[in-house]
Length: 181
Length: 210
Image (cartoon, rainbow over all chains, first blue to last red; front, side, top):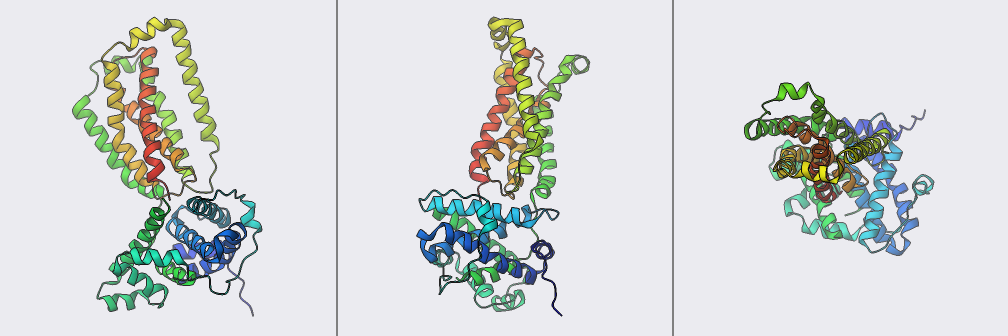
């Protein structure tokens, strides 16, 4: 028997209740759609440049997720965030872009290419972060650590790890912003 | 860092984040208390308050409050990236046009010399500095709360926050100010509120960007 696929709204609501697995599933489902739009629009940026933009959008979705109202459909919100950040990213790279919202709805999801996801900007940003913040991010991202594992490795409380992770993501977004100016 | 790794890091950050309304509920009462406290301490109520409230001057605190509330609602709405303005936009245009028409009518009645006479008072400078000063705590609270939002146009939302803060401050200041002539109140309060709105727009462009 196959389980019905939960809607993006259901996943986001679960995420808002602290369900990290649902949240991850949602972001993994959303990413190919974002990538499709960015690649269709920004072929000139190259696969790596496009992936940088995709990561910027994901970061913005994360840091602004409280602006989604749980009684509203998720897609219009998601596409509005994406559109704003994509336009931003293209402007920062000296390209104006006209981005009709329908592009998002109609975009064909793009699978991962050969190896474009070792996005360049993100590595640079991580290098500029405080070493401990970068280490915590890499722990969760690349080594798949849990909060408890990070806490015991760094001799921090779990609460402190959660706060540090959140701050690290915020600094990352701020660094990006600064890089664009 | 690969995109999938970034997603894993994002998914680990599951702490709930307070939204704009939540932050506003926390900050606004504090800001209002500061503004009201400063008002009572440094400005105080006009001595003929009871008589004024029984006259058309009662409109002085009420009139700026209406656009202030509309602008506040609109700023909250537009702090969501997918939102559209809706009815408060129309409301603000109508009120703006109404106030301009009121000013025009008063000007026709009193003439330019009447306007000059009405504005040739030290109260003008007091008004133009007091309203922005009283609005600062409110504007700060509003911008802090709105910085949790994701407005498509940060400058516009900052401007609306300034309009709301300036309007609220003008309503409070009206309890001190004893100049009741329409040819004074409309241009002086209007200019003071617009100063705050412009400030909100300038600060908001940066502070509300994301």
